[in-house]
Image 1 (cartoon, rainbow, N blue to C red):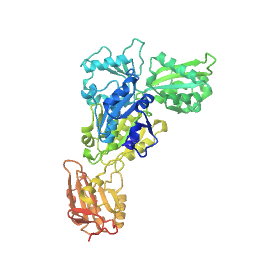
Image 2: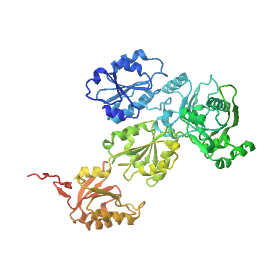
Image 3: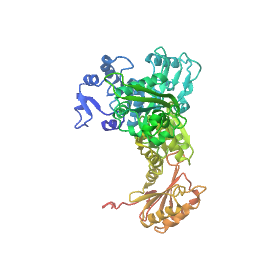
Image 4: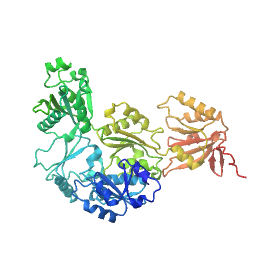
Length: 591
């Protein structure tokens, strides 16, 4: 179980008491051994996972508790890994979400007792993190908002930027019941003053256009950014990144600033900046840089189509001995948020359809993602796993590129997104196209990308029939929508000549009713008419049907796109209703 825990994205080290560790003959480097109370005290930050009894853990952490806003998230896991309980920091520290992920990975159950979860409401003080947003507002304000919502009082949501897909989730139904004492704002604006009690989520929509003298100090640039944001009434939490001319790509202060705040930095040529219309062009800047604007033009260009300038350029100069240089700042707001450093794109292989065949790795990724993108039929099969705070975005069957782009775009905005394929995403699924689109992006614009394997229809068909894949095999799709038929036919001829066991995907549809018969004739050139064929339809679903036929008499007309065929080689045989392709192990024959 320790190794499986370490596979969880949020578990980097595991601490065990000396007694528990003494029973382990060897353990990984990430394991820390010591007295339980000392370990908790020394690591009382971030998120903690404790294996043991809830009562014992409660007593151990009691002396360490301070205030809700500063205490870490604490998860308690039973020794068998069956139950995960977020004991502390369910929303504030994200312990509830972590518990669900961990339970999915271990095949256990997350025991969630929070009011939002039990009443199937959005946890408004936490949900924005999954969309890549940053929260601001006084802790007391958020506490009041959550209490009011729990008591059924009205809540008004005002959103001026960021994705609105979150409103499509089931848990959003309790919102907008009417005016409240203080609305929930999804905005780039900062609080007006210390008396402003509004609760705010900030999508990353602001681009800071920066121009500066060579070797300008980082302190001066920080001060200039703070002053610019304050003057415009905009929140630092809504900043997407820095943008400047390519000649400043090696400016030490800008590079350091981008690293410290985890901001991407976009660089533009003077020709590209010169093409942007700005309100305050400068002939002096044009003579020096080859463009009449750096800060304003860079901010607008980074913010993309439909960008608007929220603050024209303002100049800040060094005013004390600790600063040097001068800096110009302008701020533009984009139509869409941009936070790929927070976003995640997970390619999910959902398996043939039966949830029992969904891999733990895929379950964990689905639990982590706030948006599920896929063809409606595939999402329907996963629907029992979807929580009220997760959104499904259905796409059309033949619009794979559109689905990939939608998922990638959301992940670039900072969301955690699952792009779902049936079977294995890397076998005739979405992984290849999604990866090509991801690779076409500049490094700084790429969200995290991960492929999660699933059980392919080929594997389940083979398992249902017996053991037909015990020797070399290949898979061939008969769909010529993306591959010319001439190429497919060459592959069939090669498979026949090589005596491969052949799995045929996409064998026949209303618009492609002759290709399967042609494939059958090609394969018959290299193997007898009695060659066994597995005809597997609707695998992993309630309508599943698996039967054995012979290649010479294969009922082609009964095959459709929901069918997978596994065609044996010259040595495959059927016995006692099971199909086997002998591997040829010495001594395998029983006397």
